[in-house]
Image 1 (cartoon, rainbow, N blue to C red):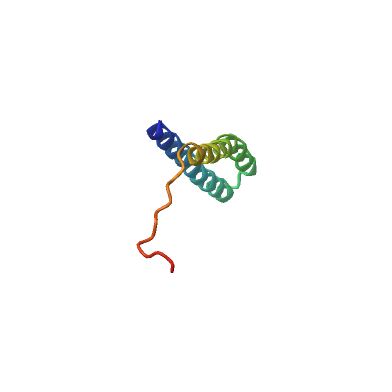
Image 2: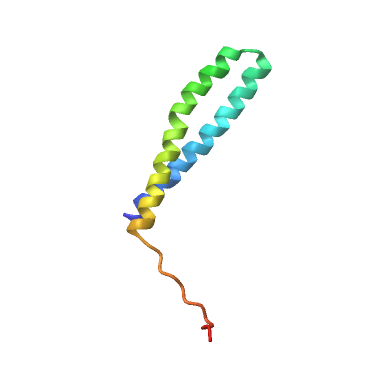
Length: 80
């Protein structure tokens, strides 16, 4: 189950970053080409994917921390 969390979180993060890169490069390209309608079109299409993906990743990270809490490491030195 941990592995599934790791894979889905990794995929969601990759979708967010690749979509963000596509978003910025697409806007830059269409700005240079002088096509403002394409800038808005790429905004609408990419936004519909990347923001829900990162929202799901956030929820999964929270659930992962609740389901699999990390044990606190004790330091070598104990306070006097």
